[in-house]
Amino acid sequence: MDKRLKDALEYANYVDAFKNQKRILQQKYEKDLVLYWKGNAFKASVELISFAVNQGSPYWVTDINNIPCFVDEVLEFHKQLQETYNTATTSFGEAYAEMLKGKRSVEGLFSV
Amino acid sequence: MSKGILVHAFNNEQIDYVKQAVSLAKRAQTHLNLPVSIITDCDVPDIFDNVIKISKDRYTQKIYNNGSHAQRLTFKNNSRVLSYELTPYDQTLMLDTDVIICDNTFKQCFAQQKDLLLYKDAYDLAQTRNYNEFDKISETSVDFYWATCVYFTKSKTNEIFFNLLKHIEENWQHYRMAYQILNQTYRNDFAFSIAIHIMNGHSKGDFVGHMPGKLFYTTDRDILVDINENQLTFLLEDSNNKYFPMKTNDITVHAMNKFSLEELL
Image (cartoon, rainbow over the protein chains, first blue to last red):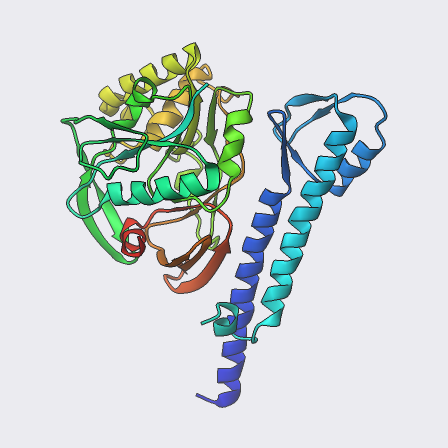
């Protein structure tokens, strides 16, 4: 096989493997973004965090399954949303940076 | 309120479900700090909270794949309908033995408001395949629910639900035809899906709640090549029957290829 074609195919394999690994990282990120709070599940999105930080008194909010939840501990709820977001996003960012560090090959990506 | 995990493990000619259950129990202890009870017809190591021995006389058969190789083996899967009466716990998380626990998401089941939780949707790690069989129990039938991971409490409603499951299992050929299921083999996923449909008033509804997190799965045509603590490495089959590598970290995966799973335990 022509070396130019061989190199291109190897790179294409790497791009494909990288894309797949990134997809799994994103799925894990979405899972990690969920805050379980008093029997309800909330996605710790920047929108919800911004909304929560502006609430001065207890309030109702719906969770990701459309179940209403009364947030009585306003500050604690916001704090936990923020922590969930930070932990999940940091984990995602570090895992992604680790993927970029390795040799640009399928073998490098899988450390074999 | 007592809490725990329940597994069913009935070995067949080739597959050692008890070995998988032992691995699951160790991982459950590490990640969830929960006791595990086993329902089985075999002798088991002294690792389980309770050993509940039963034997059922009606077994079926199914095709087990190991990558591209397939064989027909005995499938002893009809004890699950007895889970409600056999569980020693007030709050039970029932898991398939081929679920590889790598995180603590299941802990959240025990804080949910619903008495019964199942996954309706699941995430195929390969994503290049089109598994319609996991959307509906047949092309013209009702929504598919996964019996792989089921959380239930002791409640009047769940007693009715599990009694209905027993009725469906005992009259499987009738329900199979009523719900247009082509395959004759009894499947817990189908029985649970039918029972949920009936409990919802023969409609879609919110009788069951959502299990926390996502159910990630690989099929029995995929190959698990390595388990390193919470890092799993797979070879996944794409839509052209070619294999590509995939690595997961800290996510619980339902690895359906029991042959490759057993080789690594």
